[in-house]
Length: 330
Image (cartoon, rainbow, N blue to C red; front, side, top):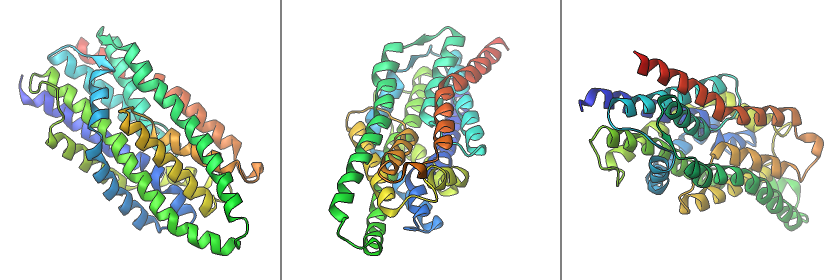
């Protein structure tokens, strides 16, 4: 097959990775900025570099995305399915970014793949979606909520005898490390999803066997994600950093939320399980916040975030299905 249609799909995949980067940059640095552990530009630059490094650790997750979600047909139809899924996911990323609402780029992409495949009559691997994708994505935010709550409780008991000012100063230093760990985990998880789609495009077009992720694909996805992260996602940073816990998370809460999320992302990566970094960090922020005044948590904001999460998969699937149906009808 000619390289032009394959190149279009790869370009869309890199655009998706870029939007993923600026949409989800807030995941790793929002609380560090809110607690003033890091300045905005330094935080985003650090996140971009560590996203780039983490991208090279997620080959196992890329294989899951490439093999366990859909089975597209070879040739033009397969590329149309992938292109439609990517456009649907990009559109959802842009819409939720514009509204300043955290949502899962992973859910948008997987929903797009499922919706476009259904519209084209291609095979959707529902068993793989449930066991390899949906179940880990349901467990990870629950784990983030519980782990962050328990670790924060333990920290409060340990630091109870220290002065508030001394504890906050020391924990700001620790938060730099926890934000870095979160950024590395974000790169591990989210770049892999772009890699998986690119490998699928190369496979259905006959340019690859699909057994391994070429280093060029890793590098391209890593650079696109890092560039998007450096561009920043300031609207969503405000939501995660200042609109879940008011007036803002304490340094201890920010550090615990980031460290708990990073640990879950690394465990999921070791198991080759794709999870949502957005869901995990948001739930961890709420878990850490539950150890303080319950009134400090803005439950209205949490409710709006949950509603966005619920509609992400079907919304991206519907847009992608419509695009695929139109493209195949031409």
